[in-house]
Length: 136
Image (cartoon, rainbow, N blue to C red; front, side):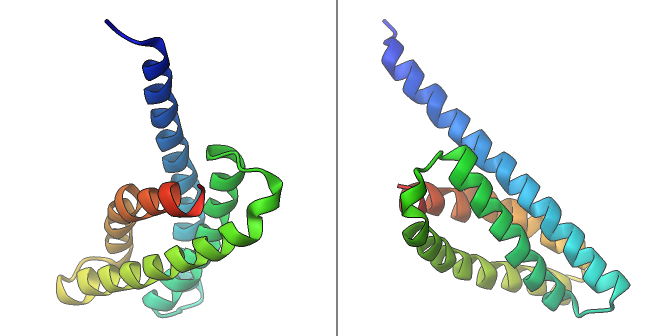
């Protein structure tokens, strides 16, 4: 026998997961575009482009997750921002390490390295830490 309340909880959890992934995709789109422009148009080093793109894309993702995916009340933004920054510093380190390793040691194009690291970090590290630490 199915329990309607359990189904609603499962559906709600999946909807939150999908919203977080959509916010991540939008933030990543901004991140990738900015990285590409900085590297290809302004000839910045790919790790610097990755760093700046991550910060702008991550800020976008934070606002989307906070206001749309997790629908947080207005009063907790300072605490959430601080937690997000701590999680995001870890993301920056992991992202830079993965992009550098895949690009420098494996010879992949920096944008492919960035795509691979973004997907890996987006569905693992970022989602779980945001759900269980930042937006609680």
